[in-house]
Length: 116
Length: 109
Image 1 (tube, each protein chain N blue to C red):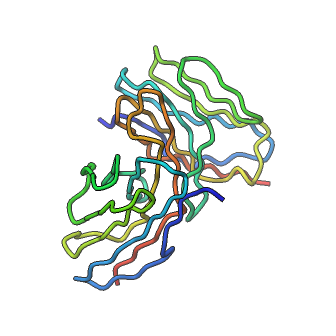
Image 2: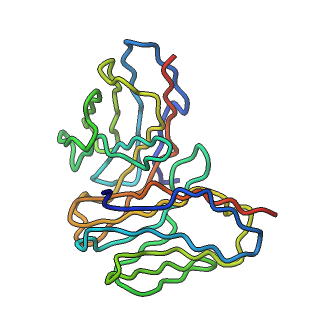
Image 3: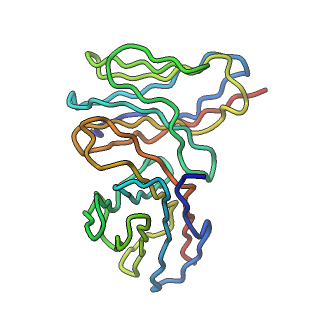
């Protein structure tokens, strides 16, 4: 089945540790995104990538890093510099970032990160 | 002021009721409008996608866009307990995609 796979579903991190969330898609989409979701705040864009080896900061990129070495993969690292990392993280993809023709965005099932 | 405003709810209705979910927006440049449904601890799934003002129907769901009033709505007819979820509106202009905060809907049997 075509889709977006995120792993792990649940992750616990100690203070000061970096953790990496995996995102893989087999939809042949060029664009991939990472969002953070907190209660009552909706979705906030962390990073996005339009093409392999290219990525752009979103609205809340501080404390996060990404890479895009393969079209189908867009891992997110939550670094120790992120002061409040406990949240629900969503990976998404679309055919392309350019939305002049209104292409839509599809989401993975999400990853829960908790700092302990 | 947020670009997209959405009442967080929760909205509680009895089974079979007609539900109206709404979003307002401030930027007239928004061109494309979407509704996502998100079950607890799951990723959002696309429900409806519209471009122009007017109505779009898909089964029990109707999406309505009023660009002159900067207002969009999602109507759910014959609501079911399985419709209980958070509903997110989303809007696009250029390369910018903006989400509402989501409305929690509870349909009681």
